[in-house]
Image 1 (cartoon, one colour):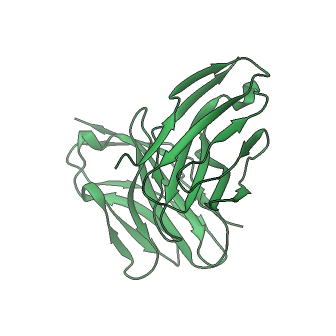
Image 2 (cartoon, chains in turn blue, green):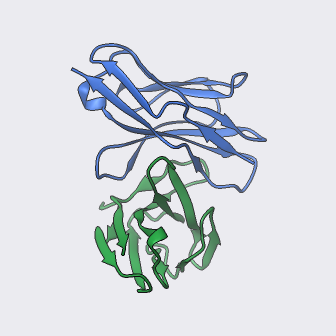
Length: 114
Length: 112
C-alpha cells in the first residue's frame, strides 16, 4: 500500500519569512514524490519532483524540497515567502516499483501575510 | 499548445441524469486520468488510461465510465448522476512513467 500525509491543513507565514509545508509518505519500494500547487479555481500545477539522485530538489518559483528517506518525509520549503505564494499545496507519492498510481495528500492551505 | 482542455467548466444535473465530461490533450501523452477533488480529501483517482484502447479503474470508479478511442481524448461518463458525485473533476495527462501530471482547469459538477 502507499499513502501520503500532510499533517497541517493550514500554514500561515509572514511575507519575507521562510516557509515549510510538511509531507510524509509510506511506500513499499522506492518513492516517486511530487509537489503541486493549486490557485483558486484553477487546475494543479507541477512544482517539483524527486525520482532519484540528490536529496535536495529545486523547483519552480524558488521552491525546493528535501527527500529524507529515514524520516520518510518530503517537506516543501522556500527561503522567503511572497504573498503570491498563497495557495493550496498538494504532496503526492507513488511506489516506483509497482503499477500503482499517484496518491495525493489532503492538501495544505498556505497563507502568506503581508 | 493548449495543454489539457476540459469541457464544460460548470454543469448542474438532476439526480438520475447522465452526462459526459470531455477531456482532450494535444501533447501526445499516452497516459491520461480523471480525478475528483472534494474538500479535505485531496484528489482521488477515478479512472486512468495508459494508451488508446486501454483503461483501468482507480480508487473511486463506481458510477463512472471511461473510454479511450484516441490518444487525444479521454471522456468521463456519468450514467445516472447522484448527489454524492457533486465535486470538481480534473483531467490530467503525463508523458512518461516518472513524468509530472499536466492538469486541466477543472469541471465543477453539481447534482441536485
